[in-house]
Structure formats: C-alpha cells, structure tokens
Length: 229
Image 1 (cartoon, rainbow, N blue to C red):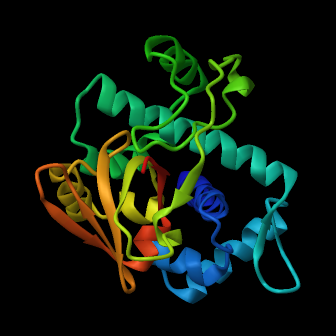
Image 2 (cartoon, rainbow, N blue to C red; image 1 turned 180 degrees about the horizontal axis):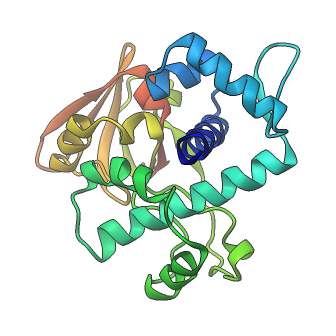
C-alpha cells in the first residue's frame, strides 16, 4: 500500500511541476521525467483517475481535480521544505538535495512539517528558487515579497549578451546532478548573477571570472531569470 501512496504522490508532484514550468502535462512527459515505461504510466494514471485525483482531457493532457491539486500542493510543500532543511541546516550540496527530498516528501509528518516552518527562516522558496506552495494550509503566513519580472532563458530573443540574476531552477535542471555541479562552479544558482547569451538553440552562461557553461533548449526553459541589463 505504501508503494502505491508514494507512486501517487510522485505522479501528482510531477504533474504540478509540469504545470509550474508551463509544460503540458501529458503521460509521455511523465514517462520522461520519472523514467518509466508508457504502459506503466498509463496504468498508474488510470488508477489515479478512478481515485478522483486526475482527469484526462479530450486532448489527452492531464488535469488535477480539486482533491488531486490539494494533495499535490501538500506533497510539493513537504518536498520543498525538506530541500530547505537539507541546505540551510544540514548543508547538503545543492546537486544532491532534490533526490534526497524526493524520499523525505513521502515520510514527513504534519507535525514535523509545521516545526520546520518554525525552524527555517521565512521559508517561502526552495533552495532552487521555486515557491513553496500552500503554506497557509499549515497555518503559516509568509512575508510578502515584491515579485520580480522574470523570463525563462529560452525566451532570450537574440544574441545580445544580457546580465541576468538567476531566480529559479526547474525540475528538468534539478534532477541532473552533474549539470548542477557545473552550474555551481560558475555561479548559476538562485541569486547568482551571470551573463546569458543565446547561441542558436543553446544559451551560454558566463560567470564574472569568465567561466562558461552551455544550456540546451529544454533546460533553458526550466531556468527563470531576472534581466538586469
């Protein structure tokens, strides 16, 4: 039974992440993200549909029901609070944090979750810069912040170098430990400032000391930045 619960929560979080990234949540996208076969994904989605957690639209994309969205928000909140704990308190390297939080999200109790909110300093975003949703559902009112005007790196429209502040790294980046390690070496982490330049289908990121890392289109879409100049 626990395996079924963990799988359901994992699927709900993945659908939520795809929505957050502006990617249409299709079964094929879930198969890619979770590295599962098409038949396995279809079987799991069918079970979740019977349980009233998702709907399959006419165009085959997946829609969270009200009950499904509530559970997805709860799982994502636990996941991102776990990420904050792993970085802020334990000091785990950023490239290892996402995978570890994927384990913690299924076992964290409500009491521990509420205690984490007290221990962590105003935990409104994950270490990757993504918002922690549904904090009001556990009795926490986060400090209001002025929202920055953000774009995705994939939206850079010419080859003009732009100074940008990294604001958020999406799931498609977080799962790649090697890439996160490369990013950290050149300052590509939330609040880090780099120069971004489009090079065809790639985006080149350059640190202040001249170190360079290239990002492909899919990963560029998963990185949100604030244009500084």
